Length: 95
Length: 493
Image 1 (tube, rainbow over the protein chains, first blue to last red):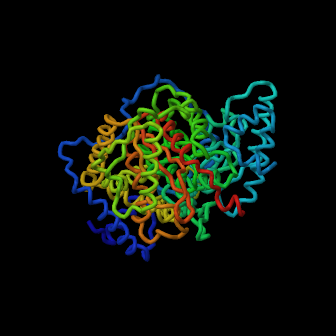
Image 2 (tube, chains in turn purple, brown; image 1 turned 90 degrees about the horizontal axis):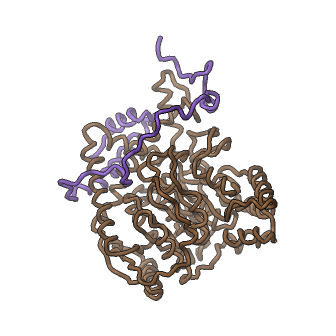
Image 3 (cartoon, each protein chain N blue to C red; image 1 turned 30 degrees about the horizontal axis):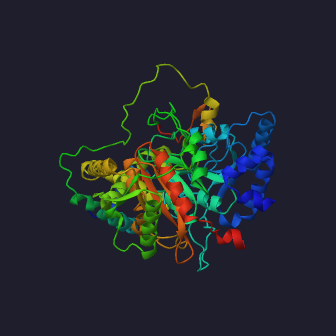
């Protein structure tokens, strides 16, 4: 399926990636080319085949329900581009 | 002296350290000096000579007290810059992780550190491990120490290109890599070294910058199969912090090489004979089968019928998982922030400027195939085909003990080539991606030089958690090939 400029703009917004307008057309072509190529999977008969999401045949185990980590606010915040009084800070979202 | 200390294998260096022929500090200094002379290759994003010296001195101290921690104690290695290292810049070769110094150490690099390995630096890679040529790094491409008869600057492969180039250039003795669709094996083949991707679940993924979580797996890269085995043992083991880490015992992999392959059945998958495969790759593959036959193995033709759909399957699943994993880079908790008028605009600006072209492409593809209305047609379809690919291998392994294939369809190519069409670049991984989708162990062994004087690799694929057979078969190939050629960077500078 070919992606047009509006579709690419929408995907880019969903992914929260700013794409300059000048790049939208070439990106639409590029992504359409890749999507067209992966569509070869439609040739494969998969009726009744269960999709697999992991190759490890394990069931996830549950660990003991107790605190194993924490009390390290300084470390958690150390790499933040902006912080205020022990919190991550972001641009104002409520007026 | 300096030259000799950088030309040894890990096994030889461990023996030399044991005999007291040289100290860990001398070994480390020799490699630090070699790294300084090899900066033109751009193997490292961050060099860590001070950490290396400190760890080498500690290793010598342990040895003096008779408290050596095994064969890696005092061995200088590189760590791919995808492993978080406590207090040391970790970039994933991206702009968006600018300045990120993790407050913790990845499980695998911690285990190597605890085994006494000496970290010389953080190796360059394709950005977020997405690429097969190391040209998507924000820190610039790595040059392959091999230039071949054409004398050109060639790619080292990718994504673990800095790791592979550093090992081949004799500036580190081994390195960690990660492999999602071939990122250990293909660069190992391009650089004339050995590298193994163990079974999915063998190595903890905790603290490794995530690309595609159902595929990502760490592994060692070194100049011999035995050296890979020496590194692999301490890298493995159950880790409660990675829910997909397998709760099984780690064998002593170093005991695996050296064994006989007499009576083993080795499969040759018919579907890997692709149209347009170069004559030298086909010839080397046949030669590999002949070496194993001469060593007493039985060569059997097998069929993996869904092989041709593996790449398309991979290029749905890997971008889908990547688009989820990379959602965490939001300019809030670490790395780059590019301001915006609103919170959304800040996210968009940060991610728009912080991700390179290939990473952006994959996030957008992943977002598309996971979006409402397309999920079943693309993502779920790919997971069904993935099941068929895994089933193909299961059936093949009912009849054989291991598979032999080429590692890559071509030798190393020039920097900048294959960059016009992303799919041309993706085809590099045609022989390695199926193994990744099935979670199986795969080893690349340097097996010869092609017509252009460039190294070529053979891949051995094994049953789940049977790295020992893979290593055993790999060492037999390595011995038969007797690969001893050195890259032009080492012989000519």
